[in-house]
Each structure stands twice: as C-alpha cells, then as structure tokens.
Image (cartoon, rainbow, N blue to C red; front, side, top):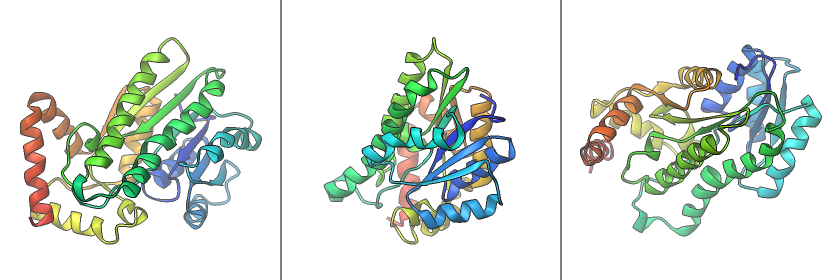
Length: 271
C-alpha cells in the first residue's frame, strides 16, 4: 500500500522508530494518527513535523482495551477514514532471567507488546475490510524468532506478534487488506528509557562494541525500511544487518544461532 493519500495509525509515535515512521509517512503524503502514551513526546513529534494538518495526536495506553476500541472512530472523525496501522509501540523487560522476573512485569510486557496490537487490529479490521486497499504492519523483533537470554518474556511477546501477523496474512489473503511483519534487530532508540530501564541502552551499545557486534541501525533508516516494506506489500521485513544475519543463521542451525546469541549476551552483560 502506497502511503500517499492514505490515513495511517502509528503507535509509539512519540519517539524512536514510531516518531521517524510518522515523519516519513507525512513526507510521503500520508495523513497520520500518531498514538503514544506520552503526551509530551507526541507534542515533540508534532513540533518536528511542523504545522501539518495531516497529523492528529492521540494520547492513550494501547494496553487499555476500552480506550483502543474507540480510537478508530476518533481517527475517522479527524480524517474521514483509516487505511492502515503500524503497530510499533512496545517495551522491553529488565535484563533478568524468567525466574527473577515478577508477574507484574511479565503481564505489563505482554499487555503492551501483544494485547495492545491485538486490541487495535481487532478494532480496525471491520473498517479496513471496506477500504479499496488497506495494510496492517506489526513490529515484532529479532527476539521474536531467536532466544535472547534475559529478554525471554519480551521475546515471547514478539513471537506471539510474529505468528499473529502471519496468521492474519493467511486469513486476509482473499481480501484487500495486506499484512506485513517486521523484525528489527538492534535499533538506536530510547526504548530502554521508555521501558523504565535507565541507562540499559547505553550499556548495551558499549557492550555490543566490545563484543564486535554490528552497530545499531539508526531509527530513521529503520523507519525507511519499514515504510518501504509496507509500500511493497512485503510479507516480512528484516531491519538491520544483525537481523538479516541471525535470520539466516537461525534458519540454517537454530541451536548454533541460540548459542551465538548467548555468547554475545555474556560479553554485553559482562557475565
């Protein structure tokens, strides 16, 4: 689905990839309903976009089912229609093993990363099916197909998104709704801070450099790859050299790939 002239909802639009996706969609002629839990961050995105009548801001928690269910009507009231959604919002977990992770945090990660996109997708599908062309883009993760020690629950939430998206692609194959799943590797964003994890991202960057891991993909580049994927009706999109390499290795030798990541994480965490 080409972005030009379309109305697209972007979640997590207040920062990182979501902000860059929003700005790029506007440049490509789309109208964007920018969604984020952080109102101040959304305002910063709007400031960066300039005085654009093609941008509407919606502050809500995507894990709030009732709030999400009324969002489509609010967007339609603002722009007249909805043609697509990019379910980008997400959080990571503290870098601890499952045995040391409490259920409050587990449930929060699953609520934001899986239930939120599902709520919004379900709320939008009846309308999207009426459009001449429509698109659902769900952002999973490299951790959604490859186990990352210390991020097992995060990975489980993203694996759920992977299969949800692939299932939707099959279920909607005879409709005009296209579906794309995205697997970013390490992206240079502030997801750690937004997840309440302080300087985790900085420590990961330093550790990755020490371990000679591929550099993080800049958020603007990640956004370009994702939007290009949507415009090309791609089935799956890999973002970053690390995601592409690990996808290849995991397909070839899953246990070896898991061991490789385990050793990388040992270096990063200094354990």
